[in-house]
Length: 227
Image (cartoon, rainbow, N blue to C red; front, side, top):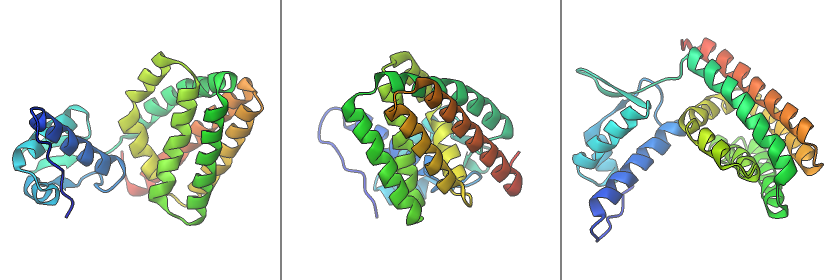
């Protein structure tokens, strides 16, 4: 049983709520809880070793973020991603992340470049091992390093608002047959463009990468009957 550690100070209640919220949020974003799953307060309380009060408060916050929906007589249900959500988010991502890659090619530091190379190497390692959980971690890491290397605080803020959607989409997309290897190949091409200091190519390749991920996710949703 996983238990949330208590903090013996005045911020205990606030910190406990935060820990519970981020734990459940992470489980949703990483696919432990699927769309349509119910979040049972008693079960979560036992799993985390806390009372039902912080669980209930965390679920309310998750509802505000659009990750769950409270349904009468059913409780809190994990929400899915609609085809319209996918279309909108990926259209925005193509523009913003393409720009991030362009700026990263112009502004990336030597240290950040080494971090980016390492992320791709680890992504390749876990692709070969077919370890989706770790693959997802380093796929996300690859993009986060590029965002940081863009040196644009407004851009980072804009991307942070889409974090929940993007992370859930990655779980579905990378779990589909063949997509992980294709995504890795696309990341390698983006890395090379950034290493070469080629902003225009980095932007173009990133836009294509996001477009391919969008097409893949739409196909996945069609197969599973998501609307």
